[in-house]
Image (cartoon, rainbow, N blue to C red; front, side, top):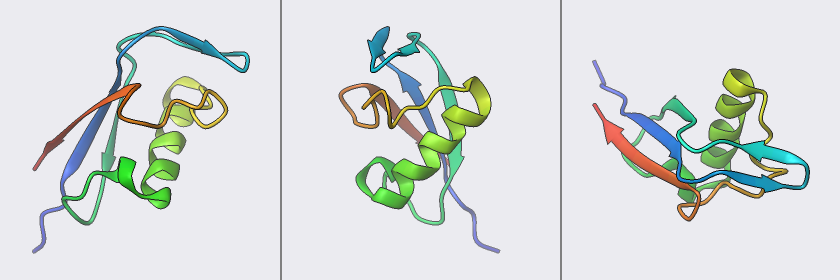
Length: 77
């Protein structure tokens, strides 16, 4: 049985970009098949964006906030 890592992403700061307001401390979890940080792939960023949209109704793509400059990431197994 393969154990898939869980990545936790937390916003670092308040931000208002393109009409999207992001609050500091918003957190989502994403399960991935590898230990590579999902922020480093287009598919991973899509998965993170979908998690923020589902949990908070926030469009992280429109806010241009899918990068390590705006998100802290921590992997757990």
